[in-house]
Length: 311
Ligand code: UT7
Image (cartoon, rainbow, N blue to C red; front, side, top):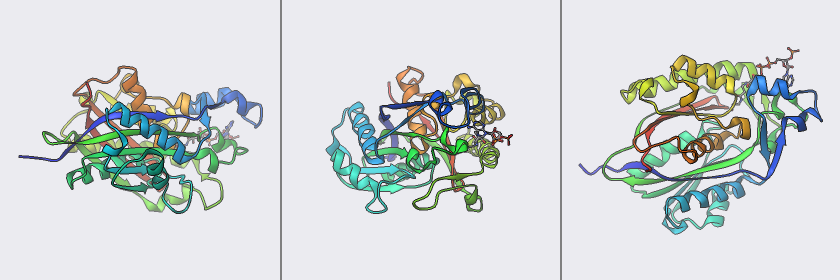
């Protein structure tokens, strides 16, 4: 049977040049490197750029790594919760910077957005798209009150991208799970023109719960167990959230991708940044099962198990 499956064929990232360390915060607000490190795992993060500029940089790198040129791309999907403009969509600006063909649209499911985008892209590949550029890009520093110690130390800027191509032999997206509980919107939100407001402890508790439930859901759907997962790529919000969820899932930290110590929480960019780091450090081999798991404002969550197809 001729199926229109999906496979990942390339990746790319972009981080702004400006490094902001815990010591930089220590010098300015009532916090300490020790508190930030122990409570979050973050040591430094990057500030700068626009959502479109970072997205384009990551996207161009991903296209190159897939051995393609921009004109080969027939769909651009941009996951972001920090668009540069109210309208048009930031994906229009990115299309103009990269030169992709076909359609382009933004998707906002907060920090769960990248995996929502993966699922949307693979659905559109089934409907006829051949080469999709999926980008997660966010500039959270712009909507974070840099004097509020409960959020300033967490949120940062960055972008990550992957190329997805049709695979007529097999579908490498083995299972997915998307969810939202809109009644929890008030625990993490940002009014237009304002800064983010967050009930950190409540987000923490719910994050662990949805990561575990959603991951177990996709494992069951794919008929796999935790031992079949070569690498877990979770949303990079707080190392304690990742450790708590992974302990319950029975996936050790050695099989988990972590970059938040260097990037902070970059929302839509966090999963592709962690994936690229793992790929570049030789942690992935062809045929590995990767478990992606995101959660964010909404409250949204998303998981997917994807077979790595790059040699
Ligand atoms: O993409 C999803 C987005 N968000 C998240 O995933 C965030 C989830 N939540 C978290 O990561 C954690 O809840 C935080 C890192 C935000 C906070 O850590 P916590 O261990 O839950 O701390 P807490 O909010 O319970 O606060 C403990 C204490 C408080 O002081 P008191 O009331 O005990 O005197 C805070 O005022 O820590 C204080 N505190 C800080 N102290 C030094 C809060 N932020 C800071 C800080 N530096 N930056």
